[in-house]
Image (tube, rainbow, N blue to C red):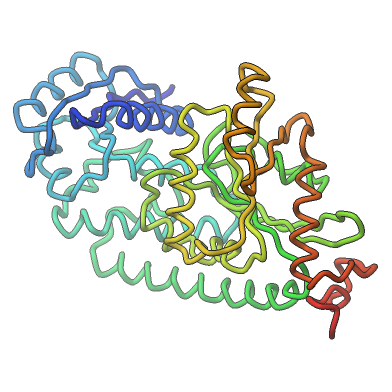
Length: 381
């Protein structure tokens, strides 16, 4: 049976539209996590309460609503401080979670490879260790379900020292994985490398399949891809290595960025970033801002970029598409539908042009991805 939750959001009076967008996104995140949103409570206030986030009186109202509706959790559309969690948990009789807990839960459910599982567990433990430092009993009240899933769920009751020891072991494992990844990167540095980056559910995996003729999982759910996959694409005789990456989201937890550092390094190592944007989404410009801010956080902000405005088949009219093209005329933007293939050939031309720039104008040599040194930058061994 699906879990049920009440969502709580604190909204500044001067930021209503942005707050609604964030709230809708949290509800979508909960849906992806398998949780039904039963009710939404929005409180307008200029500053959050330092002790209870929403104030003690409002917290008591939420507690009464929770008992009336029989829900399993209260989810706050924010990153709660350990103090907030401690105080709210004393008043609200069910799990008190925040936006970070939901994102970590989704990552835990979607982690497939050993590397992804290690990265998720590391992020979970780092996030929960901060709460354990403030309130040793906070984790024991979580119970099961959302907020407790993942590789680290059986370790939530261990003490601070053992949690820290586990974190250290996980970091060492990741260091070994990074070493192997660096060795693979040395083999790939002779090839033109392209990384697909973008907001979660922008259509990166669909575009990856279209460009490389692969068959990776495609889904409308958020954070379907947690691992980095690299495949070769042959564009006008040139071998191009294309990598799909984990999607970004607003307020992406710092723990996840730190834990997924080795995975996100693909963007740092790429010769070209394809920033995939769901242009059918209202306010997609905000997604672009989030992606660019995240790229700067991981040190890839200055990489060459082409913006791929995807899902043009979902735009309500051809007129809207023409207006967007006029608006972004002269920019490094290509309009495509990864689903139908419209515009993909134009995108390939753009990638090929960047490839030629990378080779100093020299045409591609005939080669195979398995032959490591045939496509050297500039054509020299």
